[in-house]
Image 1 (cartoon, rainbow over the protein chains, first blue to last red):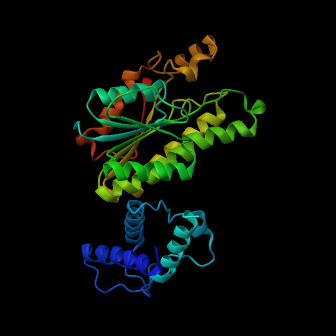
Image 2: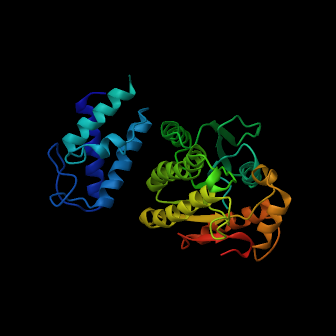
Image 3: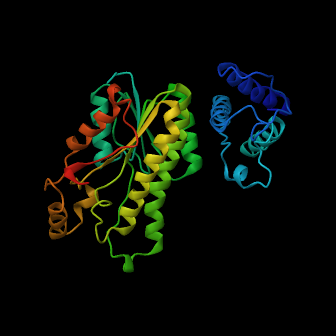
Amino acid sequence: MDGKKIEEIVITAFNEYFETQDIQGKVDADTVLFGEESALDSMGLVNVVIDIESFFHAEGYNISLTSERAMSRKSSPFRTVSTLVDFIAELIDEASK
Amino acid sequence: MDTNKIILITGTRKGIGRYLSEYYLEKGLVVIGCSRGESDLAHPRYEHFCIDVADEKRVVEMIAAVRKRHGRIDYLLNNAGIAAMNHSLLTPLSVVERIFRTNVFGTFLFCREVGKVMAKSKAGRIVNFATVATPLKLEGESAYAASKAAIVSLTQVLAREFAPFHITVNALGPTPVYTDLVRNVPKEKMERLLQMQTIRRFGTFEDISNVLDFFLQDGSRFITGQVIYLGGVS
């Protein structure tokens, strides 16, 4: 699965969540996911992470976004959509080896 | 209890887990079981996975497979557990690690992975297994009692974290039931333990399923973060 497709899935998951929660704004690669600049609260992020994981599981990729690697990084992969997409690409790449 | 519900029970090869599998099959539910070894329980509505409950990768794979096949999980019973009875001064660290791996890490992993599936359907019931050994502060069971104390804490915090997803998390603390776990304990020791309970007898499988039915029934949607001990222990 290429980066473009992963980005599409991630953006769709966020947009769908924003829609259900009446959160204004469109999501793109630079959208901030966590912290003061983010439109999401911590529970919102949990919800979207679950949605993204379940989508990849359905596609046959048993990745876990809550891996130790994600938590132990100096800069969190959950900063923006593009850092999250890069992280998922790494996990998928590793899982397919 | 609706008959089309899907229940996942850990540690189903024998003892309480085996009884619960048969009990819920009898009620018409689809039962997903797991244990380290194969199960000889053959039933059209029973599916068995051979896994170590503390193996993160395998647990993630198992739950992904269940999600793919059934689309949801309604109930989770974290029954898998091990015990070791010995004076702390004579207990190797490897035994303590083994107990915590199965009892605490295994329960945590299943709560996390099944919790994600339940969160998607905005419904679910989780029951973890505690023990009377914790409130009774039983000598010779430090590692076991401590691991189950962690389960109580885990249950109470998860109840809060999972509440926004309409998932309840409760715990049941059985007294000794006459299974493999207690079969090798000297009779006098077991008798002393029973004397510490308010109702002084072994628990039965039915005592356990009675409390589980209460936690799982539709009307219990407002009950979470609770621990019910059998035998009047508190």
